[in-house]
Amino acid sequence: RHVLTIPDVPVSSQPEAAPRSSDGLVEENWPRSTTMHVPSDWQSGVYLVKLTGNSGGQSYILFVVRPARPTGLTLVLPAMTYAAYNDYGGAHLYAWDKGPRSRAYAVSFDRPFSQAWGAGLFFRLDFPLIVWLENHGYAPGYVTDVDLDRDPGMGLGATTLLFSGHGEYWTGRIRDTVEAAAAGGTNLGFFGANQAFWQVRLEPAYAGRPNRVVVCYKVARLDPVAAATPSAATVRFEEAPVNRPPSDIMGMEYAGEVTGLQPMVVGGGITTFDPESGLKPGQKLPGLIGGEVDEPEPSFSGVLLGATPVTVTQHSGTVTAGMSLWVGPAGNNVFDAGTFDFSWGLDPRYGAALPGFPADDFGNLVARVLAWLGAQPAP
Image: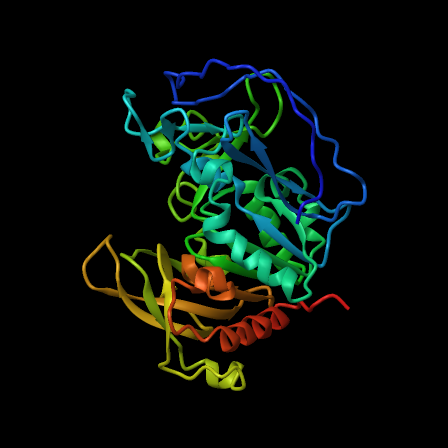
């Protein structure tokens, strides 16, 4: 909904920064054109500023209004992953156009998102879950992963932490916070796949503002911090010298990328967990398997609500893409959707790409999962 209109703001063209030769960092130091003050009565949420130029061209700026204090149901938006994939300026954590290395080692929040006209990856994976939650009476507090690193109390004070979309990049401090929250009884919901995969660190911008640069070398020997502080090396969490597999907090592990959209196969666990959802073992839910998937790790002891044999591009053979329920070592409840496109089934605008999708039955299941995680609609 529309909440505020800002009058015309005079701007001028600004030079674009070139990638820094040492690590590929693209950091814009443009002058401030205007300041928007968030009114005190705005609810915590994800907001989009729509910019309209004199030419009629439009783009977005995305921001999050945090709650004043920790909330029982807290949704964490994966801003660091948005930055990791942002190729504005020609360098990101997967590539470096015309650079001396195959990829950048650092990316900045001080530049526009090149995807979705400035909205980053928000519409691709996070938007449908958020809309469904709010349309069904839930009132989460919203934070970004950067907020969770900056203020662990926002996570430690939650009854239920939901990680939307694709939170592939975490700091060690976030991992510490999530483990501490789980030990205190916080339930965890991972509404995507391939989460908590790479360890990163946050560094200040050129002007000194903290937490503006995401650093990830992806190889310990390249990271100048790794020798002195091995546990801080920016590598996969499961790799040495970090040795903190995501499965320790999720029960599942990353399995690989799939091609196209494929149906999710309902698992046998549905009969005991939610026999009244309307979904049956073996039933196929069109289009929910997409992008990347998680699979149960070898000693997985939970329940599979979805168990889909798929072929991934990383290696030959098939893996089982799992939608899972698991009780962690601390006794907290954990849900993993196991696929990027899980939340597509919650929004009819996305469901148009999934003909024949049983939206009502699927929504009933999600509500039951949230209740198991300790989250209920606001009274």
